[in-house]
Amino acid sequence: MKTLPKPKYRLPKNHPRYESLITRELIVEGVEKGITSIHGLIAQGRGEAFDYLIGEKTPESALKAEKAAAAAFLLAKKPVISVNGNVAALVPEEIIKLSGLVNAPLEVNLFHRTEERVNKILMHLRELGAKNLCTKSDAQIPALSHERGKVDSDGIFSADIVLVPLEDGDRCKALVDMGKTVIAIDLNPLSRTAQCASITIVDNITRAIPNISKFAQELKISNEEALIKIVKEFDNRKNLAHAIDEIVAHLASRRS
Ligand code: PTJ
Image (cartoon, rainbow, N blue to C red):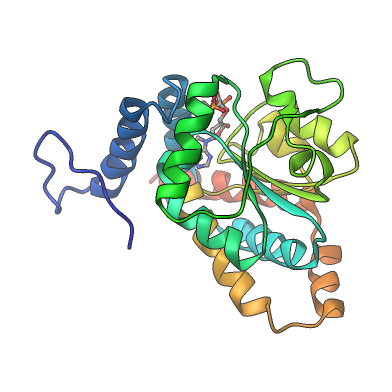
């Protein structure tokens, strides 16, 4: 069961934006605990704006991508889940569950990296029961000069599949250039990460991670051939175009 933060102000459960306010509270709490970067507040605001545009529910295109992501994870030889400060604040229990289901270790990889924050996030994940963690930073992603380039040689560096939730940057391209399959979760279908990932999930991470876990549970009994078919039939370009069409259709439906 998810531990929800206790807001310092009164937050009535029947408030029409209760869920959204609780999500904000999780990010604020993350910042106060030193887990989430202060820039994470801005990222959350951007995410919220795009969530409005998709109607604050998982669109069909995202469900398709979430299913393809689950199949890709089940086929992977060495999958890794990358964790940043927003992910650690919003869905820590959910990524630990997914990590167990698809046997993918968690690796903390930060844009605004400080050793103090890396250690706080690791401690936070361990306290919640995470056991499968990649904790070294002994390798470097080629052609990526900023702090996100520091990775674990047994984790992201040698992974065949990497889940990169919530980032808009050049790491995705660098990982794709290394020959990896990159699964991105990003509410902005136009971000650089969304555009260059192998499988892009345009959905809120709070819905996307439980959905991937649900599909992974369902697909666990499928044979390899069936999983390969799901991944092969998934076309990221087409699916991103579908996500944009869904935004346009949602906006049009609100015009009257
Ligand atoms: O913890 P750090 O130092 O690694 O920093 C993490 C953040 C997220 C602050 C950093 O990566 C960053 O600044 O990211 P950006 O450039 O703001 O990009 C974040 C992307 O995630 C944007 O495209 C947002 O639309 C998207 N986003 C934000 N919140 C969510 C989201 N996507 C899915 N679910 C969300 N809740």
